[in-house]
Length: 398
Image (cartoon, rainbow, N blue to C red; front, top):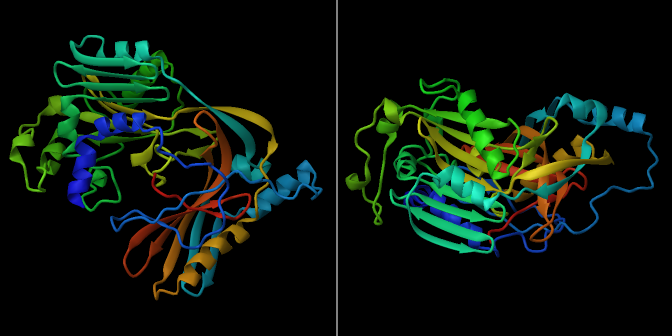
């Protein structure tokens, strides 16, 4: 398992770049899923069981129900608790219910989304403007470049992948993937500023560069502070056979190597957008944020940008099922497994989910994402439920 993770980390930019060309990677028809109680996402390295969702069916509730806007608003406030508590056989709900006060008061606003597209010429100028380019291939919608110092850049219609040699060293010391046993992002601070720039100054520089490239973002991010002392302590490189490879160690780390790693996500209002990485990596976690950046005193050392959206308000609110009925979906699922384990449901968060209709079109589906712990093993599980229909959303790999 470690060898698989290392392959992904060391070549993350290149892998991201290659994924840009894999047009077949996706959810197929993109239709509303059928109810299924067998799927779950494990985030602790034990593997995941993901099934394709079907989302083309009608996702609205019965339109014959006549409810005024005022009563609907009051109903929404009553139906979404701050905390949900219930003991149900093998399933225990001591659950924080994460919803903005705006949604509790006024309901969840309907929105539409459209994909933002980077300007290839501006991307090249921003990321490799001062770099000697030794290889390149420029085709319609797919451009890639290699720099003299090992830089790699790929630009797709809606994606960017960029990495320097410095990023490869950092990827041996900073491991963000929660599903692997050598995850270590929790070893790094998140609330400290480095000498060369504050976190906010670094973020503002990143945002301005993205705007120059044609990408607009908000201010929703998590920042990991990569101090050189921790990078040196955590450095770990393997060869193709899974053995320690000292030749790929940076070796000497100094204050010049101090960096920030940003996982930048999106939201509309105070409701987060659930991003499905390349339409098939469903874990709601920093590792799957649509924009990820390694930034140091010399600027951007790594950029992975994958599907950034513009949000547009539409008329009306989404009709959401009562939370108690949504929770019953999780209860029924784990009770039906009858595997002798017990489950503690810790958190439920309301998200906007981007749902792929076709290569150019996405729709928005409101979903609840539940974080659950399997008590006997300590496994962290994630379940996704359509907030309108109560159907579980289960993914499969492409």
